[in-house]
Structure formats: C-alpha cells, structure tokens
Amino acid sequence: MTDAREVLDRLRADAVARMESTRVTLDELTHDREGSNDDDEHDPEGVTLSSEWSRLTGLAEAAASELRQVDDAIARLDAGAYGVCANCGRPIPAGRLEVRPFATHCVACAEKLGR
Image (cartoon, rainbow, N blue to C red; front, side, top):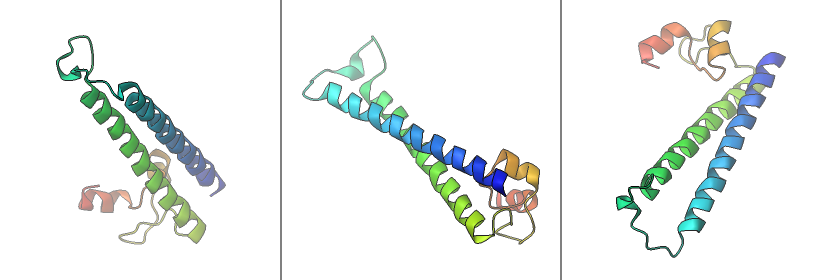
C-alpha cells in the first residue's frame, strides 16, 4: 500500500495547489475590480467578470471535491479499508484503483449504483 499512499499524497498536494492558485486568482480578480463601475457584461473585448468568476469558482469547487475524496481514501488506507468495496466488501481491482485511486466501489457495484 506504499504506492497507494504516494499516489494519494501526490493527488492531495495537486488538489491543494489548485485550490490555492484559484483562491489567489479570485482574490486578484476581486481586488482589480474593487471600486470599478465597469459594465463588463457588455464589453466586447473579453470575458465578462461573472463568466471568469464562475469558471474560477467551478475550478475551486472541483479541486475541493477531489481533496475530500483523496482525504477519505487516505483515511480508509490508514484504517485498513482501502481497496475494499463499500457496497459488497470485495476487493476493488488494482486497475480501477490505478485509474481512480479514491474509488469506493468495485466496478460491478459502481455500475449498479451509476457511479
């Protein structure tokens, strides 16, 4: 399980870095627009503030979701339950864990549950 720990730690670090980068960019966007009465919704020159805000917020939420999944997988690893299907209790195939290291269900159960 050492390999799993390394993969999960790397995924966690990547998610944290994406969250931080997005936070910094959102802060910069907010700071740059403070006190501005620009009507960016009708600016033909580029992306609107609301569009950029939505895009960055979506990226931050995706990184936070991945971080939660990775943290849950690390907790399962520490508890000795990593790689065990949460539905049927059978082992999750190594190939599935390689593709989706934070998987909680085996392929058969994931298909049944639509995950």
